[in-house]
Length: 308
Image 1 (cartoon, rainbow, N blue to C red):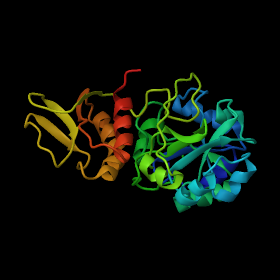
Image 2 (tube, rainbow, N blue to C red):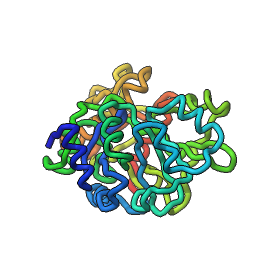
Image 3 (cartoon, rainbow, N blue to C red):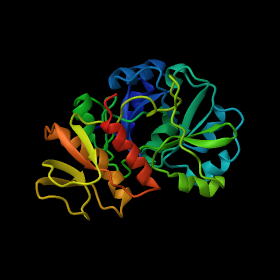
């Protein structure tokens, strides 16, 4: 059901879960003051309890209540990218273990959408993982949320979210910042603040330090078959409008090879369209350009095609 900001605040203060839009995707939100509501998020999503959540703040001023000493460049990163789709893993205190997966760290970010900032300012910090059943593509419209959780889920209608790709998550490890989840902000953008290109450090641990590390993610029900060229294939293809494909393939275009941000905006909606059409097998063109947001798009497609 669609609700007003005032109703959302009432639900959150009462220890309930609501869905809020951000500049990236929709999130399932609960107040950090209500651990039972946080547990409800895990139950709704079918999410493993050791998979930590991101704490969303209304402003930078709230951060000092929950963190210890800040690593080098943290303030510069915050100045450049907050509000926005950058989540920063920091030593933390005062965050319930239901949100941290039992870790001594937590990921923090300040979302850029004013309606959600205002709700957080009134309700206090919220944990807010992407609004989707665990493993499925993230929700980018209210209808996606109703498809996953039913019509009774309280949702603030933010329309179709223009970002479409989750936040980048970074962690200061062994004397340098590293990307531990690829996202909407590229390594190249971060390098302009850091003075070096941060590496992508995929976890090899049993305990993830942020969402999106260990488990199959972003996946439709359809089997995705990834290829770089096509000749005799038949069926449905997720590809690009500026390329030519065999006439035996029905093209679902996510954008052009010159528009990575458009492709990012459309990717999850396209994967969900495959489910709505009942498709069981879909080809995907993975002959992608290098660098920037394309690296995130590549990683999302690979995880969506994973079988484990």
